[in-house]
Image (cartoon, rainbow, N blue to C red):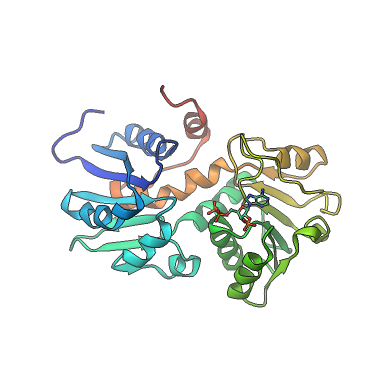
Length: 280
Ligand code: ATR
């Protein structure tokens, strides 16, 4: 894409940033919609994050995504933070306003729910079991509560983290000891893995699905590989399953619309392109 002097600019700040697929994703949309704009990887170390974030208006950026390890710092630094991001405790999308102030939001919850809705006919009818209690789990639990799940079971290797998250979410959420991770699947309508277990180079998630109802939906936020051992085991016993790449694709949509002025669509072509090999 040849840029003009009026090109709209956005990017993603992270450390490290070399493995990000976001420039590929936004680059695809910029080309598809013929937009005079660019979305670039911004390698920003933690001790430079505040200066880099505050420099966005000065550099003429419309905004940026923020990823590991800056999401909590972004929450503290934005001039305005939407209530959902505050509840999640992290900002992943920053918009530079006309007066050059910074508005922070969190689109991970939206991305998670849109992925479930596009990948399956999911309705928040029964209890949800969430494995993990880190940053991704926080966004997913808040999304599930807002979507109307009747109860949440949070199971995490470190019990205190699950207990803290459950306490913050209120009476609807309970922390489940790691040893009871299989048993807590009884009666669940949804199972989500929010940990990195099952990712290429990581051990698989050690979770027996015997107690999971046959019609429960299983979702993994890991998307490399697309078919994780958890999803394969779920499909093998007949459970519906949704892979994790859609969460990445959908969480990017609100930012793209705010910066570039077009509401982008997620379809099979985009999925294939983002999953394809990045150029060497
Ligand atoms: P993210 O922001 O991506 O969620 P995180 O905050 O580091 O990352 O959280 C990682 C999650 O994966 C945590 O729930 C972590 O469990 P602990 O709280 O016990 O650390 C979980 N996790 C990572 N490696 C794990 C492993 N080998 N076994 C079980 N859980 C693991």
